[in-house]
Image (cartoon, rainbow, N blue to C red; front, side, top):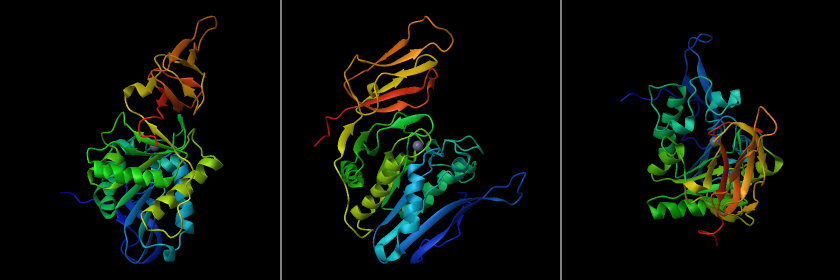
Length: 333
Ligand code: ZN
């Protein structure tokens, strides 16, 4: 078996706070013996569980990186019982390029798990998180947002799992995060995801979708910072009280939640994020991009619920995910 070539520049078992890098050898035209330097912080003190906090799995999603920079800066070892491993820019080349997938190999990191130690740069990153960092962790928080092309209601999420004991621990951690919405999530494309790789290893896993459009607002950044601290307090790693407000429970029970564009055009949303919709209600018009005088294509809601996500850009292409409708009943409390 090939060993992963990534080497940390700081110890994982040292007490106190260490800032360094995961150094990934990357030989290329402009740097023969060069490396990709992925920033990492480890804060450890005494006995306790380990939390792995990650952002920048997709390079154009910003709430996670902001929150994790803040925590890496702010948290002192004396406030910790156990260990916090913080990687704000997981897919570092994509983060620096401001793109969803890596500009080096065009790989979507969140479809590359469990990765390959002898693969491309992104496959090596995935493999290191799969084989080295995840096994160290008791709980993993992986931040996502909509990126440049989607926008979401701010929610933390847990997945439906076959192991119901593991699922209930994930749900408890999701609720502790305390986002305005909490989602039981169905993935449309779960193969190769970091989420799946972590859950297969039996770990507690929480993810988020906290906004989108390729930026972060003051409100969504604050939700991310507070949520990450809440999660660490929930595990007993960080001192202090959980600060969680009301969270609306959402469910995404089936494929009918997703709405895809079937033509190119100019997107005219008829409802906004958080608006209630009923089955059959028009939720968007797609106007012809090339002429006037033609009726728009009407997109109707497949089911009752609230608009939880939408295509962000003003133009749509056939096949784009246009809207996601979530339901507030089910797991609600
Ligand atoms: Zn993402």
